[in-house]
Image 1 (cartoon, rainbow, N blue to C red):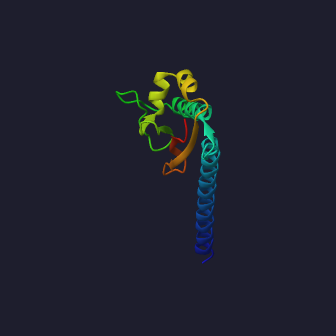
Image 2 (image 1 turned 90 degrees about the vertical axis):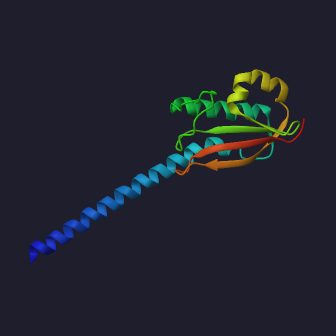
Image 3 (image 1 turned 60 degrees about the vertical axis):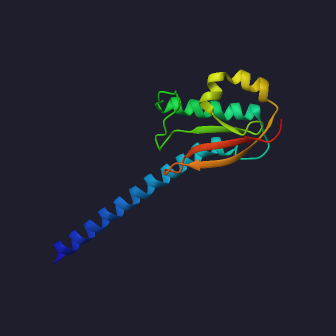
Amino acid sequence: MKKSILSIISIFIIVLCIVFVNFKVAEQKRLEAKKFNSVYEEYNKDNLNGLDITTVINKAINNNEKYGIDKDVDKMYINDNEYCVKIYIKMIINNKIYSMERINEVGMDSFIENFGIVGFKCTDIKYHENGRVSEMTFEATEY
């Protein structure tokens, strides 16, 4: 009888430890996602300019390079559903949406020269299933 009670208590303690460890791992991942997101969510506002946009694009590119995100044949980052961050810019003068890869390809200096003082706002932010920012869309508000 004592052996079966001791076995039940041991199993209960093991299960409790597993639950606790899983909780701690999940909490750590949540905190990491929150820290990761804070870098991008500070741009989730209406009063941005072209310099802010180049900054967030550079952060996204650096992030994608850090995590080794692959590119497709068009040199566009392939969403890995975990770490990839993509930035899109909608221009009101032609109603077209440009990817960060295209803006980077043309040159950040050229973008700053032409749109450095233009107003932008964040119109959309999406998240991966793991809670990390996956996409942000910005729209020019004035020229």
